[in-house]
Image 1 (spheres, rainbow, N blue to C red):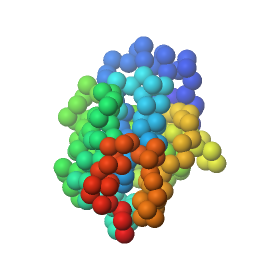
Image 2: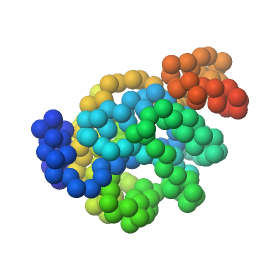
Image 3: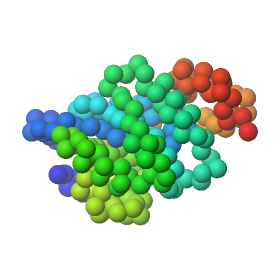
Length: 210
C-alpha cells in the first residue's frame, strides 16, 4: 500500500505489477450522461500507467450526489457506454449498480464485487476534484479496505487526502458531459467530443433536446 497522497512513479508501478498476484481491475463509475472521449482517455491512461488487466465502465442507477432531474434512463446511458467502448477489448461494461437499482453507493457495489470475485484487486478511479469529498462518501472507512483509490490529477486541486490515493497524470481533455448536453441542446455539433456511435445514438433517440 502506498503512503497517503504518494504520486505514482514508474518504479512504483513496475514493482507493484511484478508482485501482484490478483487480476488488476480498474473501476470507472459515473452517470455517463453521456460518455465522452474524456472518459475513454482517463480509462486508457490509468490502465496503461498502472498495468491494469482491464477497466470496467460502471454506470450508476441513481447516483446519490447528482440531481435526478439531470439524468436520463439508465437503459440509454448503458447503451451509450456499450457503444463507446465497443472497439477496445480492454474495456468492459459492469452492470452491477444498474441491475441492483436504487441509490448506487460505491461501498455496497464494491463489497458485492469483491465477494463475487476474490481473484480481483480493484482500482477505483475518480477525478482529482472528487478526492476532497472522500471523507463524505458512504462508509468510506470500510470502502478503502476494499479498493485502491486512483485519483486523476487535475490542475487547481490539491493532491492530498486522509485516505490512500494513487495519483495518475492524464492529459486534460476539457470535455464534460454537461458541455456535451448543452451543445446538443443548442443544436451544435458534438463530433470529436463523443465517440461516433454515441453521437449517432444521441441523434437517433433525440436525447438532450430539452
